[in-house]
Length: 361
Ligand code: NAD
Image 1 (tube, rainbow, N blue to C red):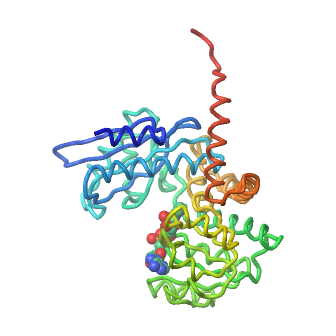
Image 2: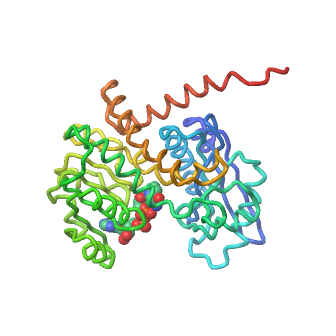
């Protein structure tokens, strides 16, 4: 059976590390996709996988996603991901995360980890006890702290680029925007859009979060299922993946889809269908890169600078514009243009890197 090597060859992965400690019942996977641009970087996920193949596949898939995300964002990092097979609600976390830290340290900086689904900033502190190769950290440990406001800011920059394409102006004033999901990112999106005088509609499955936004900003509320066929200009998904699917495509009437949620297209063909319906889609991994751009900014510079980090996040506007240019140039949907943009950058920087500084034999 060559399942794993076939998969790694198909998408050109570099390494896959399996890490285990019997006494701690510790099992983790570190996948490294591509380090052309820099060290493989990407969060650590902790999840109850049904079997190890599912876990390996998840680590590989997520690592490749990070390669594209950094490449398209203009960041000099490669793609990697760690996955711990375990209960994300585990109470005694220190031994597990310090063990992962030990394994990451062995890689000598080839992989840099961070927070992801099922892990917390506290877990990153445990990893930091064993290795310096961890990026997501609280401010008191020299990290960027909560990055959701920057993910929200990047999402709004992407939305402004979409408005420019559709309406010929960046302005969000008076634009009807429907925000789905009012969690860490969504509530920051609402706050920032309110500042920009957008006309807001919101939904969440948690009524407490909806009430908080209604009372704070006077926004209109929608039932979770009512968001798809309501009338608005911009749909901003900030909750779940796969919300662009056969069912919702029949209901959506907006001009722009631009939100922070990961994996918004249920299948790639839904990206083609959006195009056919004349809707402008801001590819999710370009739109939601703000948090990680801000978070990793200190890696090249040694310290967190809010101003410098925000300036870099702001360039998501230009990144989305470049996606539109490639989509127009190659007559392809925007989700494909995003991949092409990332691949073109990796190819060109690989050319640059062949000129090594030291030519000693
Ligand atoms: P979160 O868990 O804090 O918030 C998600 C919110 O969505 C919750 O309030 C939840 O109640 C709500 N929700 C769930 N199902 C819903 C439904 N059917 N209808 C309406 N609301 C629903 O998560 P988050 O950190 O805000 O992330 C939101 C999305 O953005 C996720 O897809 C995440 O992967 C992506 N993302 C987040 C970041 C970040 O910086 N946090 C960065 C990149 C991408």
